[in-house]
Length: 85
Image 1 (spheres, rainbow, N blue to C red):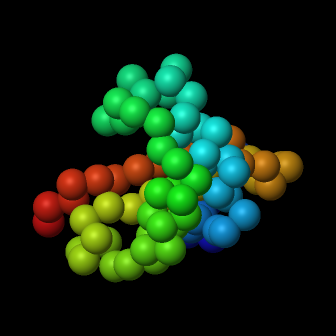
Image 2 (image 1 turned 60 degrees about the vertical axis):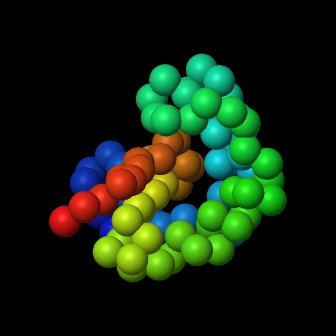
């Protein structure tokens, strides 16, 4: 667990998040919240996840999964991108 309050927690990506990310990233209703303009393949997301554990200063991006503490269910994600310290 990375950050936590009484309702939600932020955690690192896990391999089992692939299907969830695929659904979220390819839902065009979500595209206005980021910079997505075209669907992602499962392979592209898998490759992203393989490198998601890189240091923020190296990759210049970070994605965390938001989970409900009560249920442990993933309810969203939080992204930092184009990080420039």
